[in-house]
Length: 241
Image (cartoon, rainbow, N blue to C red; front, side, top):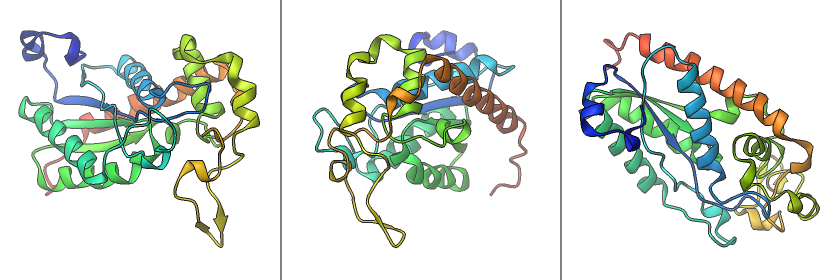
């Protein structure tokens, strides 16, 4: 059940303690993919995973702005500080738990959120009246060439939201993009911002994917999420504090 589509009486009738909270980012993804890529992909995976899961799950509205200051040079990118993001996620989970949905899987679509999500989910689980775990969809799928606005994200969008991918700009995205993330010396990334190593913000060649691969990625990620939901639903939480 999607909370934003339900009435409060619909929500009150749900018999589950399991919820999903999609989180993403509003940031540049090259000239060919929308600023909302990370939200759209997180929502697509969340919906597909919940659909596969054999049970009832509450789906919260997505958190659309994340930790993305590294993309600030590109128009339209929005970001918040790490503390703000962690607080927002923690308080949203607390709201879910208040209504009895106190086992929460946070479905993430943005690499910049990963460290903060691991930290805040641990804090929630240790100190609050809820249990939360982060799930980053591209870590659960066959995506060694993740990049940024590259073949992985573009492929999933071509499958799930084909109307939002500017197919006529894929050549431009590849020509002015970067082959890899960052500027590495002695195991250290010298670049803090994507504009330092990618002219148009793209990392990876988005032409190397396609809708068929996007379908496979969504299948992989949603199956992994469904498995995780089952484990979270069954987990014994009596000794976690």
